[in-house]
Amino acid sequence: MDTASEGIDNERTWAGVVAVTVVALVGGALAFPRQVYDGFIWHYFWGPVAADAKGAECAIRVGGATKYIYDRGACAGLAEPVAEPGYTLVSEVGYAVTLIVALLGLVFLLRRLDIGRDRSLFYALFPFMLFGGALRVVEDADNALQQAGNGAIPFPWNTLIISPIIYFTVFAMTLAAVVASVALARRGIVDEYEYPLAGIGTVVLAITVGYLFVLAVTTKQVNLFPQILVVVLGGATLVTAITWAAVERFAPEVNAGTKGIGAVIIWGHAVDGVANVAVLDWALALGLAGEYTAKHPVNRGIIDITSAVLPASITSVIGTAWPFLLVKIVAALAVVWVFDERIFEESPRYAILLLIAILAVGLGPGTRDMLRAAFGI
Image (cartoon, rainbow, N blue to C red):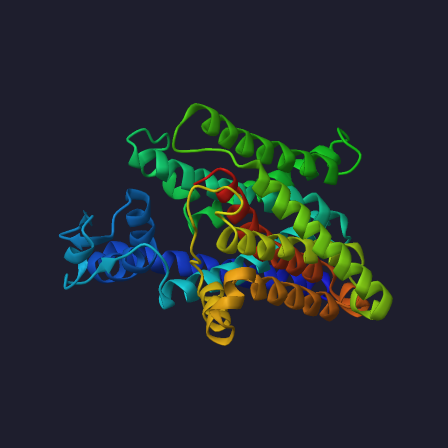
């Protein structure tokens, strides 16, 4: 455990590295705009997000201005820098480093606020994980509305809810809620900060999902298929109950450290797994207007392997996405097993934050897939 002076030194080092990085990027962009901004910042980070927000196939930077291309064929052979919606190896590494730096900064903040050593923070932040997935569906819905000429969120504001910028948006909102909740507790307005924190998360989640319901009632582009919610949430809860009962009976040491948090972790990843199975294999059977395809490489890889191993006579009956659910459950169990009592005793804040991140990785995409299908987007 760090001493007070060591903690301050670590915070100063972190702040210094962040400050130097920001100054280097801003200074480089001002001094060498074509090389640093156009060739790096815009090319790998802002350009793909802007192209996605504009609904373009790609974007090109010419003479300090951005030109959006809506013809896929016209994107081929353009002179760099060219940005396409999605991720690149450079951007993925950049976002991964940013995530690590942000988590370290969050640990320092929690230590300054003297919170995060117990499990209550995990449960208080649970609504925000659902909120992140729901907010992403708002962007999906607005894309559908823009194609019909009545989008409600103009550029560049819609970039705030486009991946990966949306992660920073949700992170900033959650951080503000944490600070505000702690301030309320310190001033004696509430007894514990966890209650207003969970309340704020529940309110923003309700507003977001409520907005989607309004769109379902008032627009043709957004519909409502409540059976998806029943199947995914009910299926995930059933899978979690069976898994948890088996662990309790045959391998109780797996959840000895996480306890109730372990069940939530498994449920969050079960939501992701069941949503994929329901949407990819049973969309038409569940009454959806069209079929969905897997967008993530892991999902596509599992579906391809299943299709190659099992004959069509079997996959036509049981589908090809169900192994993804098994993979998610096994991975969740492995994570739960790793977090034993010793980790919580030695580094409780790191353990809680890592478990929050692990749950968000499953529950965020799962919520988005579920709600996107439930609203027919």
